[in-house]
Image 1 (spheres, rainbow, N blue to C red):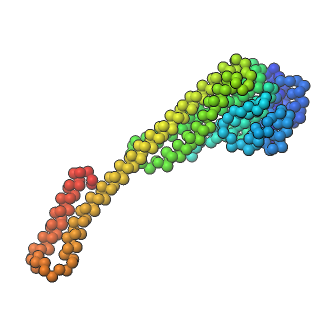
Image 2 (spheres, helix red, strand yellow):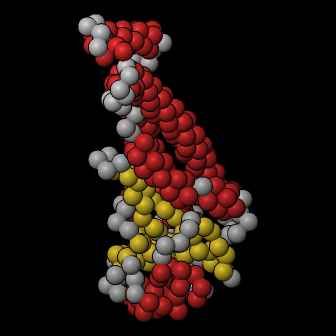
Image 3 (cartoon, one colour):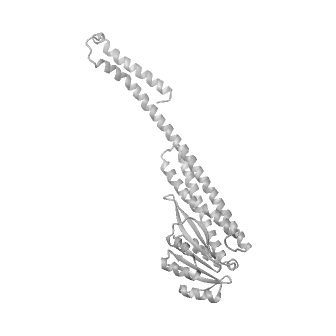
Length: 322
């Protein structure tokens, strides 16, 4: 589906073509930068765009199938960029990722969405209010999209930090039944890290102009986004280490609690073993047991069992087993 298709000339939106054919025609006549924005295009739709701008078949195949890792690839005269936008859902404590693909050429940008994130729409609205930046060409569009996606990582980082602090409070207050929550949040943090860490290298290559000619001013903008990405990746790495530490503490507390329960069970078992042994002896029905005919034999046996049980109880209590 075509979300938007437009041609920018001298930093201004020149027309709103009703079809891709009109966009191509205006672009050929007036020059400028064409921006084609697609949402989950079919092979035929993207193939039509690829034919017009000479997109590489391998990159087109990746853009159709989606589920790609964040990356930057050069194909002849164009770049293929895969970005992962993120949003944090508080109730299920999950990081939702959406995938965006960008084809960057000398005078065109093609964006392919495989998710419902607002990053591209927000980037377009902001960029159309900055004609001076838009005059710098298609790299300005890529910058705006990247900057918006990276800025949207901020609320995700804060959401994850809040949940980690909640888990920490539960664990250090003695609650041990949070192991599953720790594992699930660790998984979300790992997926978030996989989505963001490749942007470090991609932005560095793009900002240094290794993959595409970029004017010095745009390099400064891209370096700023790169700095933001580095801060995010460092925070995520810190989250993983923090969750690992919390899990270790939780497992230690669980182990201590299980050890205490084992001690209690052992103590009660020892106290019950004494009367069991004594009654077992008298239950063997031997004929010659003199105390059986002694008037004080029965109360003495009960007294011995009670005395030993009390002594064991006091000993275990002092040792902290009960």
